[in-house]
Length: 337
View 1 (cartoon, helix red, strand yellow):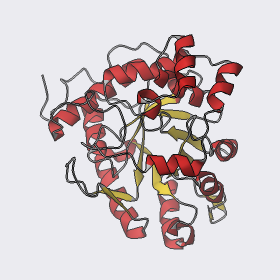
View 2: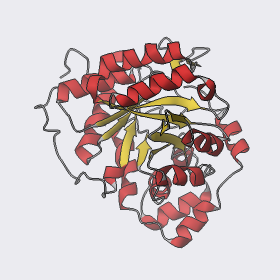
View 3: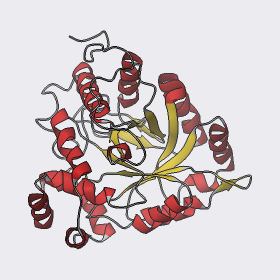
View 4: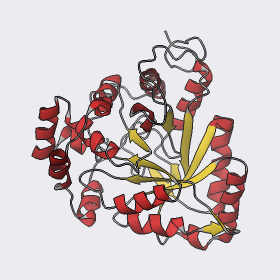
């Protein structure tokens, strides 16, 4: 049965179904979150979506798929959901699910700066357009808050760069500080080979003598660990560190190197679980996002919570690091499908 929004049938508000894990900051599951980049729009660059998503990626079908994964994640103990204005209808899907289920214990983070322009097409020439301006911030924060209301806990600049206009735009900085004064944690996400430089520069950005940012979301995986030192510094300075793309946009699940396969076989789990366990092994990683698009993928990903990697495992995985420039050049070739 579906409700009027096209999602799965209604549950009793606040029950959340089965609770198989104890939620809390000290549990492994409590350190994991669900990213909606690949569930909020029909096309994305993640590998492994074909066959896992509905054959017809209509708005209704994608909403139902998102709700199924959100339900399963909640049942497993996940209490963090991450979206963005550019993730198609991710914010709308998430808001509808929260309204229907009545959950008040889910931390919601979202991002502004990119606009989704793909018109719900797989073959769009351009899927998203970036603009870090005061006008874009005002427009997008209003849209995000209209959907998510006071459930929006963290709002991030989407893909901040070390030479981005935000660093020279005092009016935008004050607008962001104003949002923080209203109780929303202001953060930023990073991408590209200069992530570490971006994180360190952002750590020093202040408004009226106070640090502007309270959260950072960066890519870290066994192929691209270059931001690790900067993220450790951010964590030490009190920022909440979220890690995205722990599976390298699906590459570590679909096309894993031999070392990942060997460690996975030794632990009796999938290569995706090993890749995410390697992220969780970093004490500075406060929230590790899974980008699962089906319940089966989510279940496989969450096996990471029971994997304890030894020193030999971590050494073998650590040897897989590639030059950041090479990693991001290859990522740029991934097709939107």
